[in-house]
Length: 421
Image 1 (cartoon, rainbow, N blue to C red):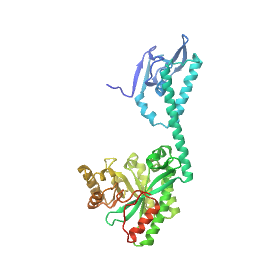
Image 2: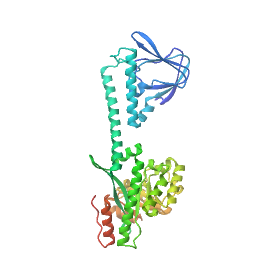
Image 3: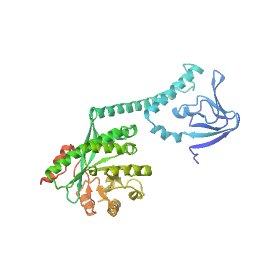
Image 4: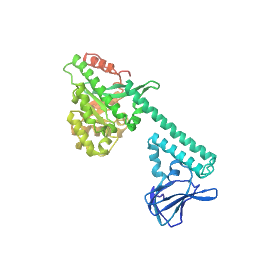
């Protein structure tokens, strides 16, 4: 039977916890008692430390996968909390690469200093074989390379914000009854000076963990509002009687938890002068359920500004639907994974049918994502889905293509799928 990742062990006075030179797969915290750390150098034992309750030891071998550089012996009756490598492995992998690099580098220097002070300066204190030393060096190099990549990415994103390297592309969202553009979704791209055009998958995850997603997100909203102002002006010019367009933008978890979110959104909308009722904020189900109380406060603030709220990728997250009546939601976006297979798979068909019925019963708008085939459009229209979005209508395009599309739709021209800008 596998032992738990965190458990306790008891030691009598004089009992060895671990020996110098052994592999280390766990660390220890002294819950009760005392432990002595000692090392053998040139045939004599040298005391390193006497540790008491609450102190940690054995962590170095756990961090860098080296053998134990000292022995640990219980001085009195001792109870230890044992922390296994399996408890920390995932955390090590998810930790900030720069902090990981610092930790490994500091630990390597400490081991080298300890070796030189306590033993032969030309010989590692652990008597590790050359292969082990090489492996440790490669591991440190891996952490160093990862940290340097992260530092470079931070610098590049910071420069991109200052040099206007980010750009917005827009994917039309069509009214499935009239076949005309009802709104657009703003999607960010990065015109990288060396790597070319980068898509969100290339940098958004890093921007989220590093915090850059907050300034990027507000830049996206600002530019989206400016673009909406221009799109609406063109629509009013060619067809003053047409319903107003809406602009969708995505909000990440880091942005959603920003304490200044509502105030910053309000400032952007007021400064540009767009109608907040034409702005649709897209969030995922997990943002609502991670902290429902806080989410409710944020959503209430957003709704008070007049914005609409859409649940993106609906059907792929939480199975509980209770949040649909707990929060002020306006739109459900059926995930593309269901839409793309609805005409081929009975299960996907039933999911789409159920979501469409649920939305209608709750008085919510429905947007079907990922429409690529005419049969899918026909199906979603038959299910009384309000809006459709996907490559069948258009790839994400530049603002000039949206302006052209508006002119064609309301000027009597035929609308055809647009090429990517």
